[in-house]
Image 1 (cartoon, helix red, strand yellow):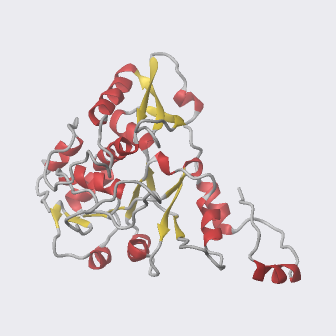
Image 2: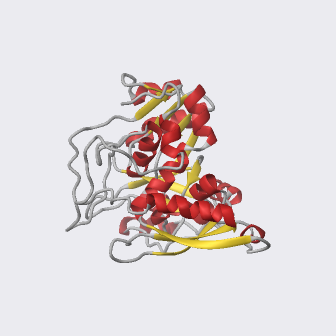
Image 3: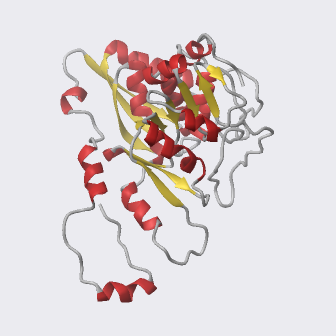
Length: 332
């Protein structure tokens, strides 16, 4: 899929001089499309056959983040790395929930975030009293004196790096992050080592961040030179990594097949996702029970949120509690 594109004025003369190039798509585009999977599971997996039942749930943005955070903490790769290797959790809103579920304690809203997207003329601004560094755990022990720049040099195959995203193209399982800093910020510091050391990259990202076009094409367009009337960011495509949305989270936690049926709402449900869960009755009921545990999760930035650094997490059927009781797991 290509976006409508007009070259910048200074490019037009050059484009007239060169004949239009024909041929196959770029190798990267062709490769990414070849390995991509469709958004929906196979029809036979979703069919309401035999004893299968279905149910719907509507999750707000913050509820989705909590669900995803809880699922990531329970992933086998994460559990193994917590026991035998290294886990790095990069800053972000969704990764704040991941860190809470793994560490087993509440994190002040805004303390574990770098870039922030606010409405132009409204919204609740976060004024965090603390600034928390990236979470780095080696064999379950929190490393308070190991900076991120040094930690990534120690990565090995099997270690886990958890990094959120700003753009999701779910149909082809592509995710990308906004780049604002000249040195590409956290992404620029970690990705060469993630790739070179073959670490396991996990990308927790909500379906609210779906975009209409492929991040491959968006990244290309944002990379074009030209005058910008305000600050236009770049986009970094995560070409390797395991994407975890609400759909994967429900599969990890309840062993159900889920798909997104609709989105949006009012009265606090703006940006919400409507999910349909299908599977055996017991599994679907378990998914509904998990949803009930996270319903009412306060907005990440909102007047009703308690931004204190202490406090309990929402009751979990084993996500946070299982992680917090893991031997050797330290506290920041």
